[in-house]
Length: 315
Image 1 (cartoon, rainbow, N blue to C red):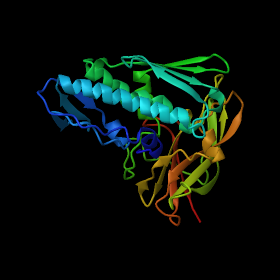
Image 2: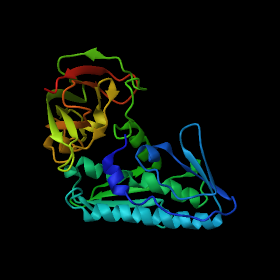
Image 3: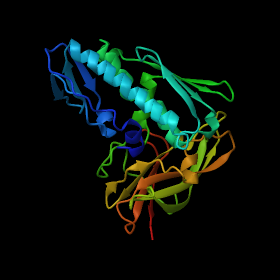
Image 4: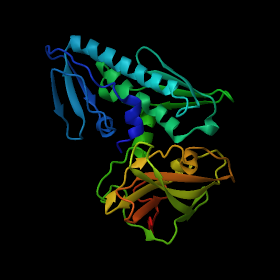
């Protein structure tokens, strides 16, 4: 989905004019970058669109230097925006990286209190590091980096790499585009009065629905689908890692938003210990405030994941 949150973090960083020179090196901009709403890219010698939707830009040596400066300054600006916004990202203490963008360090005050907004910060390397490395001469299939997140309150470290970062983005509901209800994930399922999953690892039960304004200056309305989530695993987990939630209105998939400020939505990315329960919420941008919405809940992210379908009346 084209997340306004992600666009807000990266806003203003995609504008640069580069003179035209001879061909030398190609850089591939993946489709997930443009799907996130980023479309103002630097000039290049030439560009083309690949079959998978990615853009391929051809740069000469002078342009490579300009692109490296541009990508670094853009990432620096995004990090600065995050660190200066303590209201939205209260747990993000610092974020640094090395010169070739192969190692990122994120310091957080407490992993237990992370909000969904803060979860997006871990994806910032995905939008800059692969491109920067390609401009440095690394083949697209050789791109890699490591992310080390450190919990200052406990000293615990959490490590991820490019492959895992990309897989998490692809499998999460953050990246699902708003489309007609035909979907790669199984659209068939069991129609129920109220969604309720119960397994050996967790449970999810529908608790209610509410609307909220998108922000104080907008007439847009978010619909929040709320659930009670319980963990049965020995290790801490969050609801978003166990269940995939989609919503449709008038036959069209609704865009997911973080719903910051809503207590249930702020809980969705909080991990809980075994036998603990928490009310979580999934917010979607409504087309209107009259038509009912249809919620598809999947127990997992695989195409054959068990699915339950519930219709919710807004009024």
